[in-house]
Amino acid sequence: MDIFELCQDFCFDGEFLRYEIVTTGNINTTYKVFMQCGDKEERYLLQKINKNVFSHPEKIMENITSVNAYIDHRHKCEDLFVLHFISNKSGEPYVIDKDGNFWRACKFFDCACFDSPDNLDVIEEAGRAFGQFQYLLNGYDASRLHVTIPNFHDTRKRILSLEKTIKYASGDRKTVAQEEISYILDNKKLAFKLCELLDEGKIPLRVTHNDTKCNNVIFRKDTLKALAVIDLDTIMPGLCAYDFGDGARSICSTTDEDEQDLSLVKFDLERFERFSKGYFKYLKEILTDEEKDTLALSVYIMTLELAARFLQDYLNGDVYFKVRMKNHNLIRARCQIALCKDILTKLDKMNEIVNKHLQ
Ligand code: GN1
Ligand code: MG
Image 1 (cartoon, helix red, strand yellow):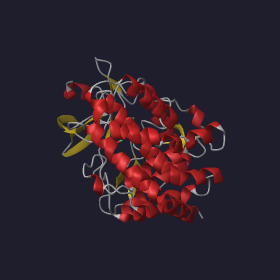
Image 2 (tube, rainbow, N blue to C red):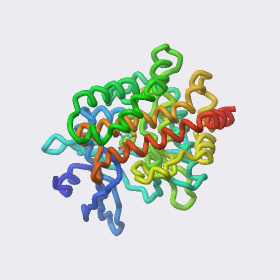
Image 3 (tube, rainbow, N blue to C red):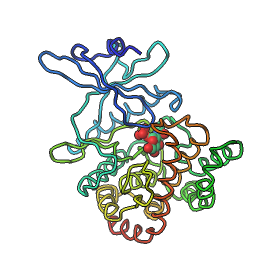
Image 4 (tube, rainbow, N blue to C red):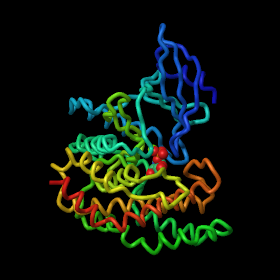
């Protein structure tokens, strides 16, 4: 794709100078674009939405625009802002190229971003940002949102789908992954808890982000205060436990998601303490007792679910997540399973920590 030509269809200020590819993110493809605006150089992020993952990108953009407007209008929130997209010539927040791909662009902020932070103040801020984001959307009617990926965090359906893949998978990959397959299938029952409570109507659907990885928060470089929650592609009706559990999985792990030395993969309780403190700062006012009871376990569930997703993609021949090395999805699945094992030994302590910060 000619990035220069594509940029002409957006209402950017300034003249196109050059672009660079950005290598983070497992789904979409991102570029940094440099523009000359008078005597200043401005930077933007330009992103191609992955059509294999999101079959209706316009619905994602509708969700994001609507949620952003809600946050902007309902709340004058000084310590969390939302990212707005640059319009095309007809006022839509995206451009469709000649191959039918959706592209969007926003201003680039010179900020800090972390995959696996060890600074406890940063961790508390990440928790604060994700918790506050959900708190700010408390009055938003979740049924107004398009479900852009159905059953995204339905752990039971995820595991059922993995089981089907295992049944029909053949060849080396299945043999190589035997140990990981067994771990997930042997431990699946515990991971169905959120689905069961939701079916029984015991926990409410809220507006959730659904991808609360640490690198989906941006921080001011000087103060390391969280500025914004980004990557709202999967904003959908969901459970508080999805966002809390996935956030803790990502932020309180001692390694990146593809660590190969499994002896280094641990769930850090000191980080969990600070993440929980930040997360519940606002949210504790609105959570129900039944929701509160699910939170520590949700960390295990979200970790097992992601292990199952990585493993399934490995067995399917790497069709969903971008891979950057040989056996990347298997390595990722192993890392999440190692994290699951450590989390299970710490669940009592995690419940104590959650309860303390919910007071
Ligand atoms: C994907 O796009 P990115 O990297 O933020 C994935 C998440 C996974 C995550 C694991 C739409 O997120 O669900 O938790 O990778 N997003 C989608 O790193 O599947
Ligand atoms: Mg994402």
